[in-house]
Image (cartoon, rainbow, N blue to C red; front, side, top):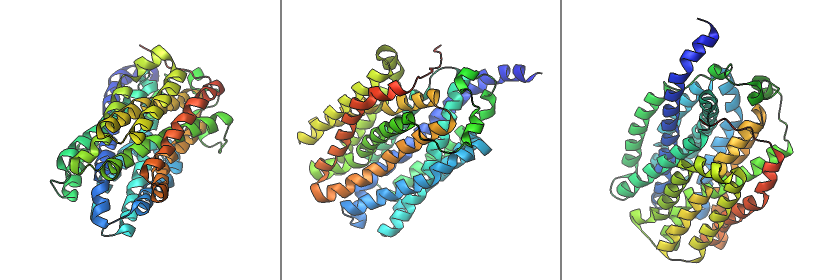
Length: 406
């Protein structure tokens, strides 16, 4: 059998299976993050931390992630994104238990740095695997993968709403570790080797320079990379602010206790999940630019409602609008980078973007210590406004080459 014939028989069955498996990978990543997010107030209380100390702990996650993200690209090039995704997924899952064993801030920061390092590698590798699967299927699926991440966050939040305050934190974490470990075992064996898309992808999709050689060509920050990366940074800063601070905002500012403190977080991730699940339809109707800029304005309006009107129900609605608006900002930017920029440029945009997700929430913690959490969350609101203003310029700098729809 020729190579072409082998690929023709291999791709249809294995690509669809890999799509399902990678959806489970994204879902598991979100569930682990959701489990940590709803337990932040409990960890804070158990260790008697203030906002600045919580910010330092969250900063450890960011630093841990940024320590592995720059090198994960070379790991995926050498070993394949499917292998790196599987290994980093197991590492991230088992690292979830570490923060709940910490007796003080220093050990908590170390535990979160380890968790962040595993997550940084997993983030890059699973998105690289997403590009592989998307190209093998010859249709856009990246938004749906990000929807699975949000669905995982919803799952983690809902489970947390039931278990927080009713079982010990470590027991909660170990339940999630066991379930996620089983998911990782099933999904990791069904991901798609990167090499199988070498033939089906046309030169116009790959660009004139092969992707592998681009990986070793050294860092070059074009204006498109800088602007796309900056908008991803701001979008993921707003996303991270909602993830990490919504529960504390409802707990400390609105005075809700126990599982009720997760209302805003849960509303945010549910709305984001729905927005991403149907995101491709919205993009087809409105176009990518209008989807991004309109979504950013919706996010700004939702956060303004949540922060200015101190009613729990209206605040919950505000966080839901924020999640709906943000739902397709990052997936669209990733798709734009993935189809308009090659190799190193894609990695640069992803790294800059994740820096916002990982470093933005700790910065909000530092600011909150001095001016209060509601005012500090205004940083996320301002970031959404910037995306709405400059989003058009980003799409003017790149010419996206979309995959054909079925």
